Length: 393
Image 1 (cartoon, rainbow, N blue to C red):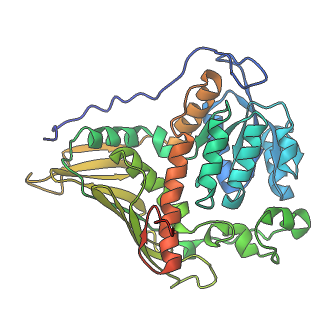
Image 2 (image 1 turned 135 degrees about the vertical axis):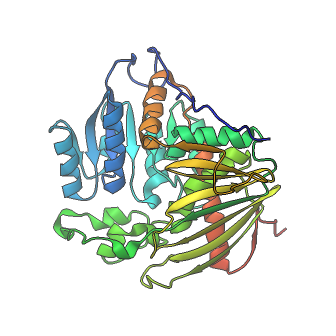
Image 3 (image 1 turned 60 degrees about the vertical axis):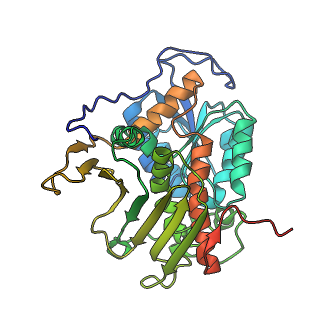
């Protein structure tokens, strides 16, 4: 039965002391400044660098982006110290301890594998893969190297998410046969975008391995909603939540999936803007719903157990006990005090020095992306999809 009070005393895993970085070109002490390269300098990279600034102890040595103004912005941020490069391989040739990668999804695995091969530790934004097949490629590259790779699943370092997982795994909710996940965002409310200076953009390099196609400002800014570059809501948003489910429920591969998706609002997108999905895991089901023209309720998860329900989002969590009078009053409540990306970046920086496993190792990111890919596969086929697929032999 759930305790009526819960002491919030979770401490982050802080690695102290200076140890030899096994695969690095230099010995790192606890107070040494980390030399970092930036690959992909768009909006999300700005968030990562803001978090890194809060952690401290690093300097930007080099930046690569196919769009000149973004390279220049990072150079300015480094007080002019960072070298700028169109080709990310030139960043990997620098004397670096690590790289941060926040390119569009279709570049993630290629860039990460190249960085690992160059002896760099890697912070790789989610989803870590763009296709199902890339999961094995990325995992093999990490595990055959001596490098650290932290997946951008920042909930793994976010204190109240860690406390919520402790409660779930401790049995406080009873048996949990159903988890509801959701995320609503309003793309209709987006402000005016800056006009892209196409003379400062290498569009062909931006496309990379994607099919050749004319420049599109819509695709440049909203690439997540086009199959050539992203995977829609299931890899952009659902990936975060299903990672928390995998973590809490100690199960990371669905047995089958179904998905309804429609383009009711943004007909120009490839990916659906309105989604209902269901995935079955051994002993429990996970549902997801989202729509990109409404932001009321934002995003979150409900772990519905036989004894209690835990409602969780990035602001905190609440636990509601079955059979307790006043069901609107939680018996446990916790609030978030800062963005978990800060502690996630700190964990990455700590692991660069200690060579310890990070909070979000490659297997967690691959599994989270895989669940989204499987749901998208069901959408493309217009049918229920069993996993793993049965052999045709």
